[in-house]
Each structure stands twice: as structure tokens, then as C-alpha cells.
Image (cartoon, rainbow, N blue to C red; front, side):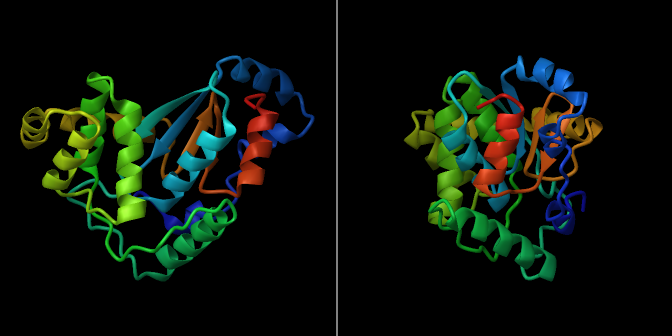
Length: 225
């Protein structure tokens, strides 16, 4: 399995290096001019949901978040074993960070494949409804416990943000966006991304969930807030 929960709990602080006063400061200044954060995420990953909420609270409107799907378990890989000690520790750590900002993350005993959920978002991008469906997918999963692996669930969810039921079902049934989702993951792996959540600012990256104060400090060091 490409995603390693244990690894995500380690302090992969390549972005944190920007906090020091080394010659990297000039590089950071050039990166910050982009005013862009690339966010690698999956819709069943609680760490991704946490980071998504944190970014929404921290980043000003002039900083773009480029969303890049990265499936935890691309089919036909085996699904994450939620009873494993590694996943349990990851969930506990993420839940603690979430509780600190008033976000209640309830553990789930089943993590479905999410390819169709990412396909739905790409379809919504074409229809000008990306933000709406992105928020709806995360809410459905972490507030309602929705099974995002089911096409019927996704079609109905799309309808709540204005997507046509018949068209959405057809898009998902014929796998119109499947190649794009697979390609985006391949591109992420080629760029060195191995897990979710991952944030990239230029050549700098931050892997795994963090407390909001630490994340704010790192974004501030990159001159993004």
C-alpha cells in the first residue's frame, strides 16, 4: 500500500525548514510570490478533511488552493484495515488535532475506494461547481458517514449542488473521468507524493496532519498568511 499511516505521523518537516534564517529565505520569497498551495488529499482520509478545514480558516482569499486527488487505495488494492494499530493511532492523532479547533471526527470502521468521488469532483469542475461538491463530499463523509464508494450516493450528492442527476450518473457509469483521476495520482507520485494529506508550496512540502497553530506558523513563514 503506497500510503503508510505510520509515516504520516512522523514530522516530515521539509516545509518547516523555512522557519529558520538560512539562505533558503530567498527561495521561500520566490515561492510565496506564487500565492498557491497544492493540496493532495482523499475524501475518506480524516487528515485530509482536517487540513481542508484548517486551510479554509487560515488562508486569505488571494491564496489559491490547487486540489490534487490522491487515492488512499486505488482499486484494486485492498482497502485500509481500520482496525489496525497504525490506522487507530493515525485516527487518534488526527482527532486530537481536530478537537482543538472544535471539529468532531468520529472514527469509521470502513474506508471505501474513492475513485468515483474524485471523478464526481472533476465532473463538477467542468460544470463550475467544484467548491460546492468538494465541500459536500467532505461533509457527507465526515458529518454523515456516507459511503462515497457508491455511485447512487454520489449522484444524489451531486444533485444537492445543482448537478443534473441523469448526466452525473452517465458520467460516473461510463468512467468518463477515470483516466484523469489515475493520471493525477501518477503525476503526484512522480512528484514525490506518497501519502495524504500533503501540502506543497513550490518545492517545499508538508506531509501529514498538524495542529492549526503549527500549520499557521509554517504558512506564515512562507509568507502566505
